[in-house]
Amino acid sequence: MARTREFDTEAAVSRAMELFWARGYEATSVRDLTQHLGVGQGSLYAAFGDKDGLYRAALEHYRTTLAAAALRSLEEETDARAAIRTLLTERIRIAVGDGGRGCLAVNAVCERLPPDAATRRTVRDMQEASREALAEVLRAARERGEIAERHDPHAVAAFFVTFLNGLLVSSKITPDARALEPLIDVALTTLD
Image 1 (tube, rainbow, N blue to C red):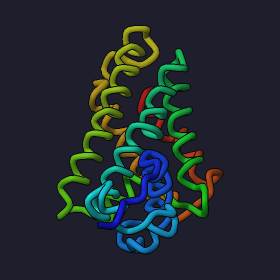
Image 2: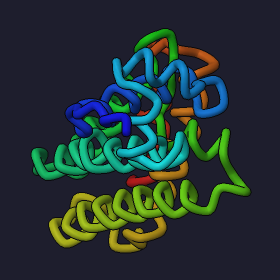
Image 3: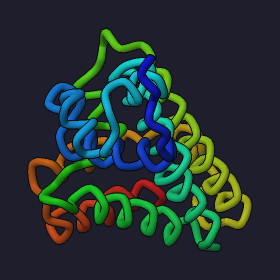
């Protein structure tokens, strides 16, 4: 019986995330993955079941690392406009990197939906977390008088998530932060 090669699955997931992010799911073959990760096909299947299992693990890794860090950044600012500006600016900076690779989650939606229910759930969870975090920032800002009482924090948070999704798609078309960042000022006028 062949012995499966042991490897650091967390490091493999992180490296696979980068490859899927750069190439997309369909353009990334199992051979590409085994070569990039430096593992045998049997080890990859033993650890993740199949390419789809590794992809789901990569999306989950993205959710718990980069997406979670973006939401934590909202807590670092005391002013809602500054917090939202920082969040959006940082997401643009990441998305335009590497020639405009965009956002792994948004790329996944564009490539894998509607038929991939698992991807839909994972990305929906990410977006719900973003909406909730933004709504909390906006609720607190409304209580402090930073934004008008007429603003519904949930609706405005949903707007910013939707706006960010559009920016992230646009970053693949125009991978230039200087062209995209002025749009943040326009979006922030919704808080006036």
